[in-house]
Length: 273
Image (cartoon, rainbow, N blue to C red; front, side, top):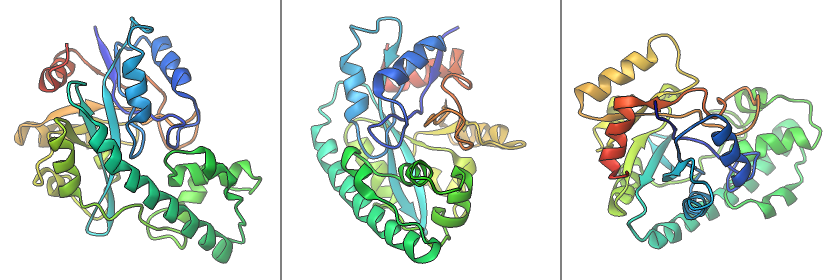
């Protein structure tokens, strides 16, 4: 049985581990396919794809997690590419996204000081290609403030909290179109986390697939997302959204996976062998 984990992060965005460390974890989990899906950058994923000759026991699918906005809510769209397209133009576009993230990070810094008396040293931002709220939460803890990752998101930087700012003004419709323009497939990431939009709202904008298998799913979420996929002619994906060990929010590489017929459908849609 072939297995794929199609959602994970590295130090190219807000992951705790370097690219090769993440690849080795995937190999240890006996995965056959993975996609590095860092926030608003393809750099790590393309680097992995170019290392295919070094890691012959696992196959790399170029991917990213694109930040968009719909009805005031952050909507993440996973984009997957088969490697046949020139993606330099897309990466140039993403550079502006990352600049907006940097601006957002310093707004969050000011709000953390104002509302929570957290005077965050921002030197860490100099070493990050894409600064996310996850990066900031990890740094708050690292700099000695007595909060958990969950507390930081629930009370400080999560949507609706005093230090929350959106990372982008890119609309979800435009984000999906952008992925399609570069020959990619657009997938709604972690639909279980939506608060102000329904999965069907995003499906109507032209996505190709839905991340039905995800560690934060509750009750009948997976069955519901599978039904949406079937009724709207979408494929499904699976991902653990790995960032770090035991971060209280995401899964571990290989815990959940896509396999068998569903994996084959995804690979056929992407035209990957």
